[in-house]
Length: 97
Image 1 (cartoon, rainbow, N blue to C red):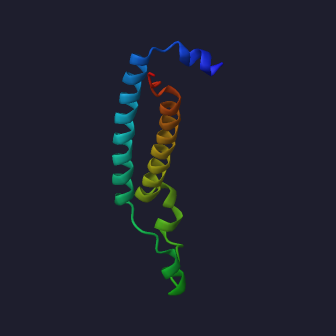
Image 2 (cartoon, rainbow, N blue to C red):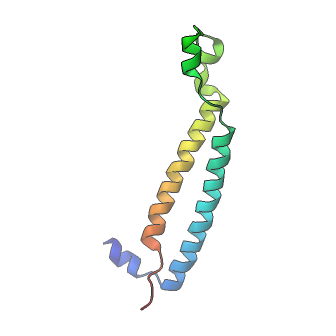
Image 3 (cartoon, rainbow, N blue to C red):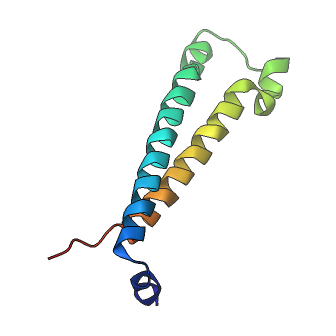
């Protein structure tokens, strides 16, 4: 079924779509790199050894923190990248013989 639908797209249209998808993947890749670099490292193991407790206000409201938002953004960008990569694979131009 997908082969029939995709065969209706001309090769020139496939090249345009592929170029747009490559640009989107590049922008999303840069965004993922920036978001990951903005995140702080996890030091849960060190505080557990030294007897530190996460029973503070920050620990209870961690879901609303900047770190949690950055983690969610990273996951969403990764999922979008995955979907765009699959669409790119399906729509890539067919080489002419």
